[in-house]
Image (cartoon, rainbow, N blue to C red; front, top):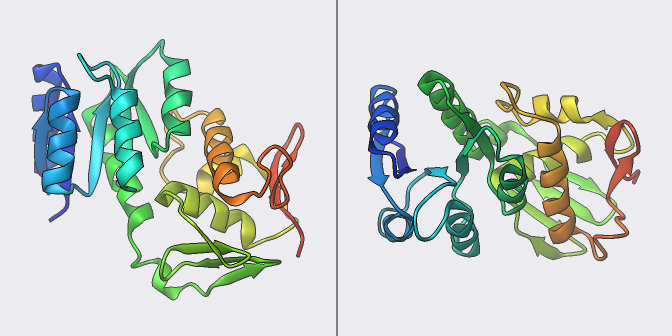
Length: 227
């Protein structure tokens, strides 16, 4: 059974989320603040974290930053409708997806399942490694190297890079990339792709400001450099 850590200080919302996730077959742990969330993440090693950004004390962005410093656990953020800047920052910190309050609990369960599908290697076992120039992507091991150097990506970043590298030279729109990484189409917006690409470049490119691999096609989207 997959374990989900729900970090939410509004107990009414936390209970609803817990009940829906439990009914969907997940084991659920609830934390009401950032310190408790980090302690639970260290002790329980959840498969996914549902993280409210508006927490007392240590806020959700700081929790996300701490989690990303020590693990690649998938993160689905909960944000208020007016917090677009926080959503961008959260995605740039390595969150995998977000849901805007007020939200449908069924939608949240669908997002959780979609993100967990991206982290599962079961579907990837059928895929062959991809090599373009000096970048190698191994779906079976969920491993990326560039010139022999390991590149640590979150599951969403991995899927996005793999989608681009499988067809070097092809121009993908942001909408096509949202579809390629599964499950981000409902109310997601295309700037989420820009945030993930920015993260990939920081980790992959020798000079992120002058990318060699993941290239911008202005007014359209992105492409992976030709071999």
